[in-house]
Length: 136
Image (cartoon, rainbow, N blue to C red):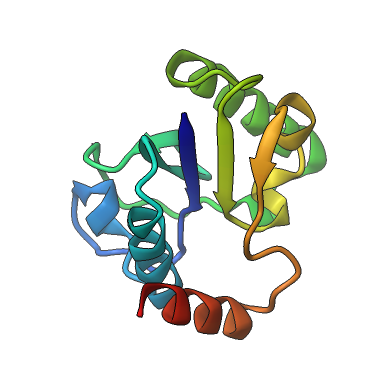
């Protein structure tokens, strides 16, 4: 099974919405379109507040970011995400495709057997270029 994990974004609608519609940044929308083009079994959003989010889950806007969390807070967040992930995927046999930065991946990857990071090492501008070309 292929599972795509997309990072949430700070730019959001200011009203309750489905997760896939709440985040309105250009990078998020390109990442979602790219994720869909991969035809994975499932796509989730990695949310700093909610952990693993289904695309159709309706949530309130929030202002939480991993960037301001301490290392222990980030580790606790990753533990929560792994618990959620284990309910919907096999972390030892499924392939997890990260469309998310280092902050989101760092404490998850050691628990995963198969993963891909297509945007690794790319600046935001290069990520956007990669995603635009890939979905063109």
